[in-house]
Amino acid sequence: MKRGFLNTSKAKKQLDQTALAQPLKTEKGMCEPEPFSHGVQGFLPEGYQSPITIAKLVEIDPKTLNYSPDFYIFTAVPPVPLNAKLADVPGGWAECYISGHVKRVIYETPEFPRLPLSPPNGKSYRIGQAGDKGLGMFATRLIRAGELILDERPMLVFTSSPKTLMMMDTSDVVKLSHEQQKQIVLHEWGKLAKIAFDRMPPENQEAFMDLFNSHEHDGSDEIVGRIRTNGVRCDLEDKDAIGPLGGYTAVCKDISRINHCCGPNAIWEWHTDSFSVRIYATRDIGVGEEVTISYCDNLAPAAERAAHLSPYGIARCKCSPSCSDEAKSKISDERRARFEHEPITLIPPFDTPMSAAEPEDAWVQPAVRRLQELEDEGLEGTKHYTHTAYQLINSYSFLQNVEKVLLYANKLKGVEKVINKRDLNTMYLSEEGIRGNPIYLAGELTKKGMPIMMTFK
Image (cartoon, rainbow, N blue to C red; front, top):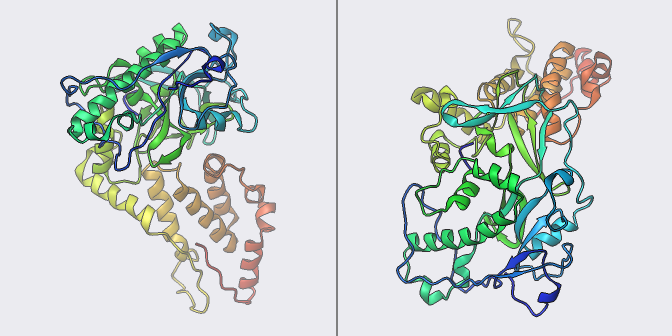
């Protein structure tokens, strides 16, 4: 894949091989530096001395939660005995650098720590060569839309926005250039990441170091570079998180091998109860086909996507003609902008008779075209796709066209589970159910001469 402290008087109670440093303090007027540079080698300011001191302490009870919300903790999640072996811990565990607030959120999550899910139809992928993309994930059998491909507990969970500068004196920070500030953050981030890395079992250390590093020349060390290249965002946030500040990233053994596509066939989800990342198919994936996810906002213009992908070592995205061909890229940009900003409303003719030469479903065609464009762009795994499919199901129910209702219901069935977290109503999946649909019955009344005004948004 190319992507992407505590010192306290209560030390006797603390942490299972947990290294902690001083609590983070935000000075008035201070902020995180600008986003890290990519591909530009930077250097620490001359004479720089780290403000962070790290004391190695041992946590007597790994389930301890009585930390200040802004104390950062090295700990294993879920908790495991000292010197635990991966083979002895079903699902494994993640070495983490998290705040006291986040640790409390994790442990108070209902059903934590449940085991990661097992795909109901067994393993369906392999990791193999993916050309100039390095390694990738490939289907070893037909994977249906909506199917769970993998539920994996990460090797490492780490803050994605270290607040090192907040620990420095404001008068010192303002003397530094933005680039110097970034280099300090990367330097201190690396020291902390090394502690988390050293806590990992040998098998995970080896798997982690085998991952691609697209940040070899910007001041990131070999551990931080791999975190920045291969991490996927967790739904974990510090108490005072603002946007990306205070977020977390997870690095996995297999999921971090999945490559990017601007029209992906899978999506990922974070689940705190199992402390794992799940990969679901958003359309059917054939045998031998590469499994892909998106590293960026797929509805953004191609130029914006390219800028976001550059730090992952993707100099020019070639995942489809809409990325690599200038003319097709322009068409794709216009489509994606419409998906986001031009919703379709379908209104059946009410008091205006249709032309005899006009198809009965002429008023439905804007949604038919929209769904086809979404499929052409590979965006089945979006709310726009499910919304448009529902419009078509309801519109053709009103027209009493059972065949078309079944067509679009079967397109929606798999992805509905993934996007809307529910099974599609079985009413839409059989002729009997469709004929009992209230919208179908409203269409029947209309055909009998009782005008009913309907709108499908």
